[in-house]
Image 1 (cartoon, rainbow, N blue to C red):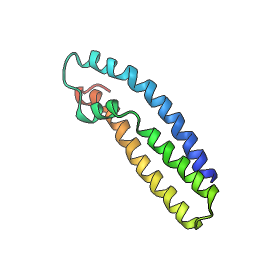
Image 2 (spheres, helix red, strand yellow):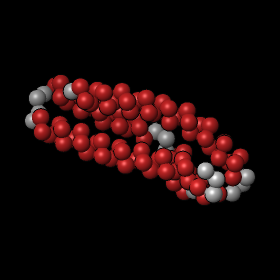
Image 3 (cartoon, helix red, strand yellow):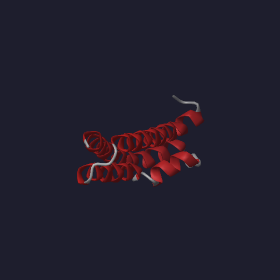
Image 4 (cartoon, one colour):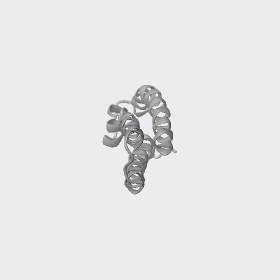
Length: 108
């Protein structure tokens, strides 16, 4: 249960940070690009900044399942591993999407 609760807490922190970041980021990128198109991945990350809340919900459900009944420990660890792999992949895509506008212009 503890790994799910910890992961839900960390996802909530990430979701709060990402919502604040994407609010200001969209205006900063539009000003910086001076009317040029925003890359597709960046637009998707800005539009769908709620994805960490899905991770919070899944981890809370996992914690409740581990409290209500005693499933096999291997099943919970496999579920946690799959959640982490999927979340790390989405985090990597998000970081790359936030970086794309500057890489596209050749400024680092």
